[in-house]
Length: 336
Image (cartoon, rainbow, N blue to C red; front, top):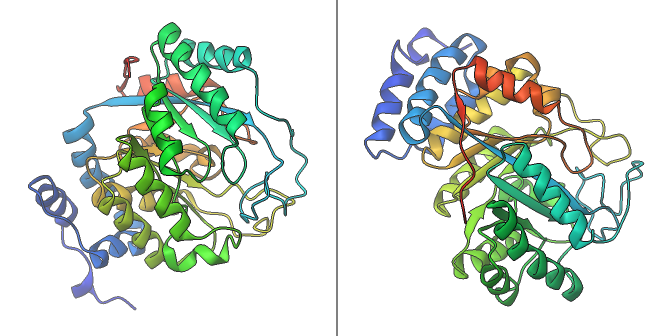
């Protein structure tokens, strides 16, 4: 049993937030204490995290729109993914969408007030055909719709990353997914080091990093903290935090569900470790945060509007209503 002496004192989280704003980098032990905090402490932790969110992002919310530009047909064995070679989930499977289809997606992204259009393909790494398709469509997206573009194409070489930079991609998404020590428990066809190499190649090309993870895959608190600290070391601009949507037919289909409080604690920990990074509530938020979704936006400053890769999101109107009811505002689209 935790003794009263070990519990954070009144005002502790506000004081810690003030120290972080002043330049303090919290320790792994302090980060883990957020994940271990009791449900009774959640509002106090959220209040501290909101200080950081408000300091660096005000009361704005950045919207992202995602298109699954190539679905299924993946040779990798990521245990969480319905598109992997191990999955028997009944999903749509198709090759790369046409330029017209990708432009239709960009049009929808703009109509939904998204700031960033995310082009995602399944697979280990992009083929030459897929690279050329991205290189052709990105300049059109930026010219016609004034959107930022984030590309998620799998493992990238330095040449791949440079080509994406040259065609106008603003940032690349490549999630670490979990801590280094847990990675081989969710995937064997590529390594944590492979993912780190891709992120380093992306940074080397002068592109922004979008990298986060998934909670609820059987990881420990220490694994989550390791991931957060790694993202801090990379100075990651954008961090999507997903909440495992355990899909029937995937190796992780029987994982225990997360509680809304688990999700809030993980978001708060990520905000305290990475106070200046854009923090996005991503896949699984509707399923696991449920009625606490509004509370999560006092910590995170970004969300996907619409559907995810192979799972449905809530109606966009629900997102707009939630943002308006909180007194927050959607940021306008910016040129890349």
